Length: 412
Figure (cartoon, one colour):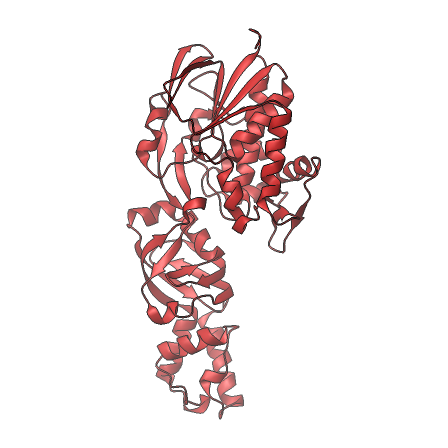
């Protein structure tokens, strides 16, 4: 290694770290780029995301709309996505032989439906650009020696010198996981979980595990958080896009409530009480002799309809003609305002997402460089940025990594 080569350390072998390393090495052949990953697994979240298919990005090309999918960081990401957005991500992978496809909900996956396709592409690019990779080697400490000159101490007690450092080590479930960054003078927003499902102790409901409702509305009772979309009933409670979205937008409030709260579910896809009442009244007059249990309304799946009817005190043999006013009111209520007590959360360890991290106010998002320490950069989930499901977290990683890599490759 010649003396005039720029020594760059990438801390974290995930999506943001790899993308930054590849971009930096491609832009500046004189850059000596090294990735440090504390675990033995590279690109672990890429591997498991999307059920092992890797939800690379989202088809949303309108930046104004795109930033709406980020409960934290959306406003600040506007300029970043204008420089490298979803379409740039698609072109980047496809120019390297990885074709992507768009599904009906806008999520984009490799046509192989295999996350290993994305991993192989990134590993190949890194290897061809001579990016060095160390696994099982944790960075324990960073010391600022001088302007743009850092000492990196690893778990093997090695001391290495670099001129630029990118921190892309991901989020931390514990606030103490950010202490080493605080020691560099960076403010940190304490992390709390985001993107999780809700635990509900209703054995009759959870007995419907595997059943999904494609168009529901969920609200946190007594709080201004409402989301819509598919709900999946699981053996521990409820999950699916509407629930995960709600957990994300209300992450800090739910943490403050210690994950004990009530939700209200509209199973009809947004119909109001008066609409459902008219629908029931019409059925009563048109089919008085039919059994209530055999005629699901509001687009509700039959198995769920039986559960809701039973919850309303309706017997299986009851005919529409004999449905009392009180029973009708209860049925309407459970259709449009079904209440459940949530008693905890369930997170998916491999895909664990937090909100919180290094405060965006301390980072220049035009370059991803620290405003406090010259030569120090950030990208990925280590920042106080998180998104809804659908490829948005990965897009923030690709965008941040690309911009950071470009910036680090440039001479001061």
